Image (tube, rainbow, N blue to C red; front, side, top):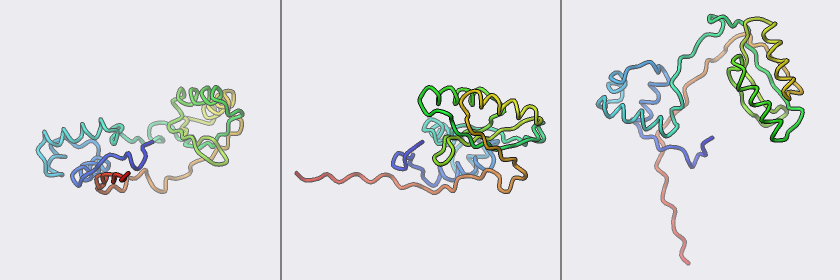
Length: 171
């Protein structure tokens, strides 16, 4: 997680470039250049810089799970039986190893993790839940996703002012 003070400086061109990529990451570099008003070479340099800085983590396609053969889409709130480093590592390694778990976040609150899981059928879902339970998941509360109300949305980007130099204190 990047601290707000450690955020990468984004100017107007970066914001326009990132906004265009969030809407459609399949755009060609030439299209991006035309959209942001830069040469293709300068646009490519900007995209590389944004990737190297970690602002752009990955460029990927967003699939429809049901259309791809995964009609069950559930959220699982999971609590660990133990909270020591070894138990946490075992559980998180298992989460990372299961391809049916498409998202996982460590959270604060009543539960320890919020997982997003897809499955082809109830049997596959039961197998995933059983593996979680045998690898440290003590309480697994499952929520069946009925309908997507709002798809993942672009970040509400705005240019960030450069960090102001810190005033030196007189001694």
